[in-house]
Length: 341
Image (cartoon, rainbow, N blue to C red):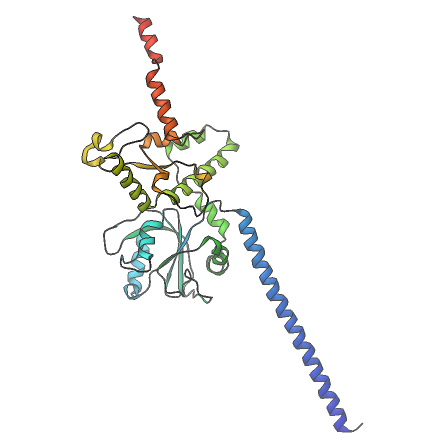
């Protein structure tokens, strides 16, 4: 065999091996991508199987732009545990911050493309009429310095030009994969556990305390979930304001539909336009995305509101009928008083 033929055979063998290696690498890459894709699909299916137990709400909030170029200014807000934005912030973001963000919601704070911390909103809107309204929060976890985000753009990612954005519920698995795990080492289920720490009132605690210990945790969870879901649906200020306006136009004043208590008549100017809003339909029967009307809310005082939420569920009309029935019936103490005479 000549040297030329031997050289040609060697080169052909090299090309063959290179081709085989390239095909192997291609299969390996394709396999890895397929595995990653399947893993993501499994994670999203697992999330859907869990169900919206808490209607988990997570916000992106940015202290960016010219107003927060100074690191000392950003640190000052962090020390105060306050997030803020200009009331002139456009694209509905200022309105979302003022009316849609709720105590108990989660928020991750960023500056430009850097992720800074994960927190939980702890207050209603403060300084509502100021140029820079505020909300307080507690820190769940700080982020390592220089934690730059390098992923695709979404409205809720640091590299998108937005100040305040709610992560859509169907994109929460993506948020977990791109923000929550890599920057904070947490998962959605960890936030669900945190969300259960929402406070309950003393009388609600007393009612729960009377239950057997094994039933306490489950019933407390159900109570918190109910309160949180009701808060998300009812605390839309525009809806409540419109419902009050509708009721006042119809009746000339605001009063409790259950016991007819009039806050203004009892407390004067302090009670002007004060009333609570109650769903005429049980929260559990309201599907996600349902658009509520002003007629879906009843105007009630705090006492009647609590009575309406005691099991079994009754309507305002049924509660009023029960109270009228008790007023018509003789008092159980009347007989005892007559007997002593």
